[in-house]
Amino acid sequence: MLSSSSPHGHRPPPAAPRPYAHAGPAAKALAAPLPSLLSPGVARDPYRHYRLLREDFPLVRDEPLGAWLLSRYADVRAALADARLGAEPSAPGPDCRGLLEPALRAAAERTAYVLARRMAGRREADLVADFTAWLPAAAAVAALGLPWEDAVRAQEWCRTGSAHPGAPHPELAALLHPHVVRRRSHPGTDLLSALCGGRADGQALSDDAVTGLACTLLTGGGEATALALASFLANLLDHPAQLDLVRARPWLIPGAWAESLRRDPPAPVVLRRATAPIALGGTTLPAGAVVACLVGSAGRDPYRFADPDRYDIFRADPAHLAFGAGPHYCPATALAGLAAECGLRALLDAMPGLRWAPGFRSAPRGLMTRAPRRLLVRPC
Image 1 (cartoon, rainbow, N blue to C red):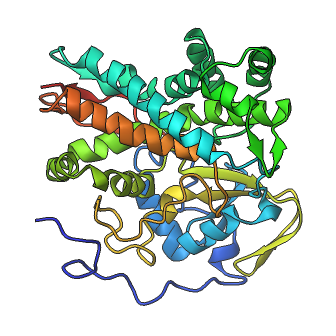
Image 2: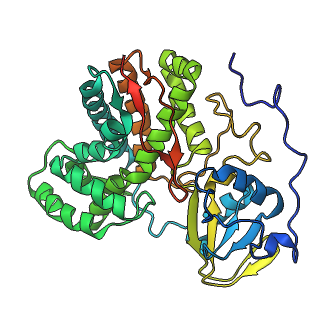
Image 3: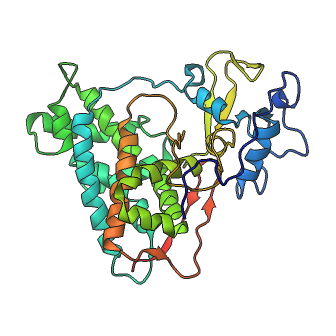
């Protein structure tokens, strides 16, 4: 029987984490026998290494990586929200969620059902190659009313560009500009037309604002969201009892998605560069220092989460850091959540008996980005 993330029935975490050492091992460079994140074998199972860092080296210099490592939840969360580490949004865009979210939901639903039904009659399917790799970018392209071939280009650009959802991409901006100009003179029923005619704080949206929002959605449909979707589906397929509960109670999907982002974030290592001297753990790092925020370690910190390695859709407060920290609204994050919800609904509707292919077990790969690269399933 499933339980909540209450510590009842689970081993409770220690009373308090070990404090930093101002001149001790917590602020020293990595020395043997402690390996670098880049050492052979760490990428295969980074969580064993994360545990060692959290307990004994919460702030430590990793020379081969060229960065200071932060591994505890509280420290990583604070660093991601600190403007001195480049975590502050560069230019908050207009909040157009009233226009964005209904259009994104409709597009995600349509796209997910098309992709799911293409797989439904097969004896075996790969959910990565045929579903998660396409759904986010294709949903954004469909919502904006762009040609289908733009989904292919957007997917490739996002794969080779910034891994952070919403980061500007000059090639995408150049592709979008003529579409924005045409929608100004000949509006349609798509989201791009709605944005061209939209207003924020009583002012019409400029071409730059419209292009920026569209870029945010398209980059949000890139590799990070696709990897997060792959881990989400793998977690549920690995836990069929929880998958059955989500099938019967679809309102549990947002919590199941947040729990997957906590346990298996798509970008476990997020690099930030200090723009000014910054004090961390009793050590002052100079401007220009690179800090690796270990999101994958923070999500499994036993001082923040009970039984942190366990996937539990009933966890009361997953509080993941997969898409950064802070209260600002991000359209790309909204798209990712809608892709997860609509995607799972479509799969379960088209494939009621969805399960792993015989003998297959998912195997996440990667250090800087991490997720299963194949998800072989029996559709029925």
